[in-house]
Amino acid sequence: QVQLVESGGGLVQAGGSLRLSCAASGSIFRINAMGWFRQAPGKQRELVATKTRGGSTTYADSVKGRFTISRDNANNVVYLQMNSLKPEDTAVYYCAADRKNYLSTLSDYWGQGTQVTVSS
Image 1 (cartoon, rainbow, N blue to C red):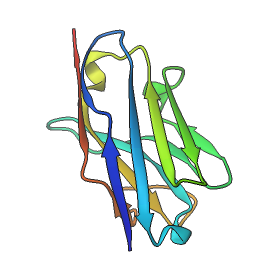
Image 2: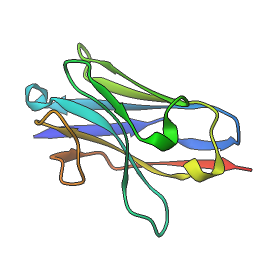
Image 3: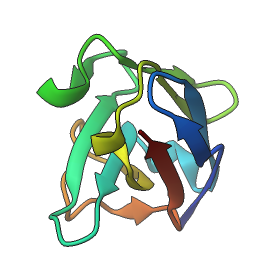
Image 4: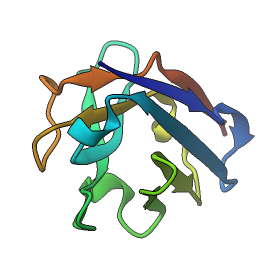
């Protein structure tokens, strides 16, 4: 099994920045893709950013140019640097990991979620 523990959420004003962290433990050799989803009230869970073990990166169009995903493979940590935050970025952010080279809502492993609130 793989355990994912997120940290770094909080309340920030529009235009501000936050950095989320997600530490993986357990059977980490199974992990290829790691990344972040978010879910706002009344909306579907949305894939925000993905980074594979090999370094391939994808972003949702809504966050391109503002968010940066990075990954420390040696320490099994993935980060999400969020800049120029907007009120519409408000959501619960979930770390996810998968044995495949992509993430989906059916991915193998999930964190508990961390709240990000952006005030206008």
